Image (cartoon, rainbow, N blue to C red; front, side, top):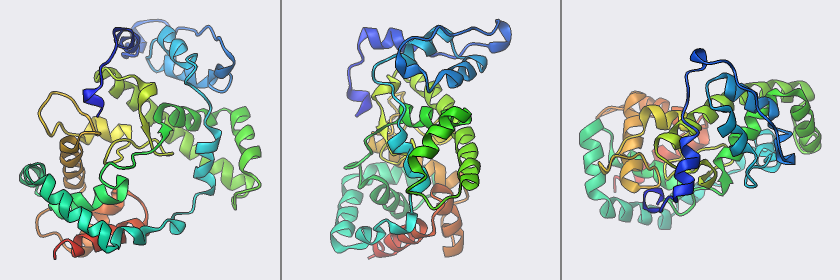
Length: 296
């Protein structure tokens, strides 16, 4: 878990640079670029500085050898087909048995979440099963690289480069690609800023956090903006760590409650709430089927 990792003095000093400053109180800073890895992210770095992040800190971060333009990962956004995912695996007897075992193992945490937010433990368990198989697979993509790469698509040169990569493997027209890239880059930029804010607040190295190809992280696969607004400290240790079962469980309950879940919720209402978690009918129907199976 993140909270059990020892953070070196060097890491803490580095991360302290990422705290936001008041952009209106000081002149806009410029970045001295260094290293070939910066070429895809130059425009992005300037945007971050204009929005209040320290110029020197951003330059240092993006010049790190662990930073790269994740064209392979982000390309999945333009060729990914939700219907091809094997959601049936989560309805098999073995998966449901693991879900029952999880509810036994984390009975106290699930009870606390139910009391705090009125969200059925079976719904929380179902989401954790489908999202990460209860933490057995949380993703292998660098959250920082994924969000930076997607956000950088605002730059026309960067966008052209990615189009050349995906044009032979996507059903999208160039016009449709341009439209999707524009929407995703704006979305990713918001998430990137939230991610940097979260990691600075929690004294975490942004380059050491891995998640999905979309930038979701933790056992519950929250996007950074949701971490800032809806994640909860389930074990009361003073930190938000979504690789902690207690925090992930409480955070899912917080999320579902925020979007309208309540005790005795109807099937259609439950569908609508879960749909906010993942905009896929396949996903939602799988979650609801798991909930039914967990009723015994």
